[in-house]
Image 1 (spheres, one colour):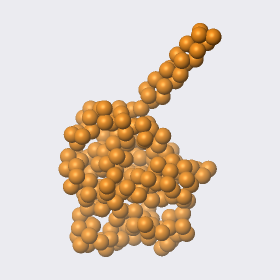
Image 2 (cartoon, helix red, strand yellow):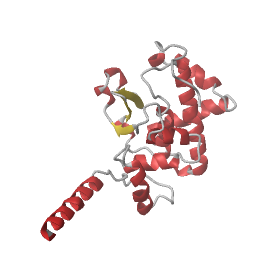
Image 3 (cartoon, helix red, strand yellow):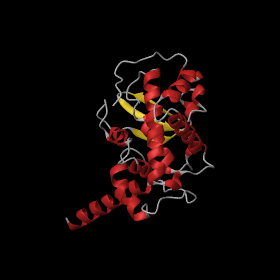
Image 4 (cartoon, rainbow, N blue to C red):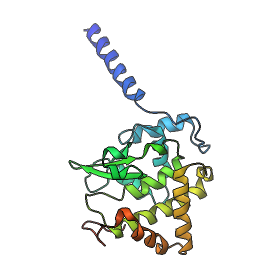
Length: 222
């Protein structure tokens, strides 16, 4: 009996170690705020590993706390229309649709599960920039989309990025293409006196959204 228990215990340990090993560490070249020690990151990973296996994304989700993006963070954890966690991963977006190859990220629904796929070119983006991007994508919770929904999501992204920069100024890595995107959105938001005035114009002029309706069923600004 003792031998059986010992074998079972070893099995559980091996399973635990295998699960822990699946977490991707944060690239060494990414500068993190001082609070994000490895011990702290490992602690928050317990909550976020069900939605992503990259600790870079775990830090991004944690940064969304106490910002406008906290609604999106909770949606990712399961408080969304499907009542299931949203899976997040870096993925070659051209595999979904060739026209998505240059997109920064897409929200996807498959068999009542929601996914957020991020362009792999952003694997070295600061977690603060990823936090802003996730705040946008988590607002897309069904298969419908519209100009109004995109305008709201882009505006949310700009607001979160503005708050992130105040809390974590080291997030502003000017060599990152994602940070470049976020800074452009921030500029549009501020140009409109902290409204969606210029973001809306940009969304409506976006070639990728030319076939979207003005509104979509199920969308309601939070």
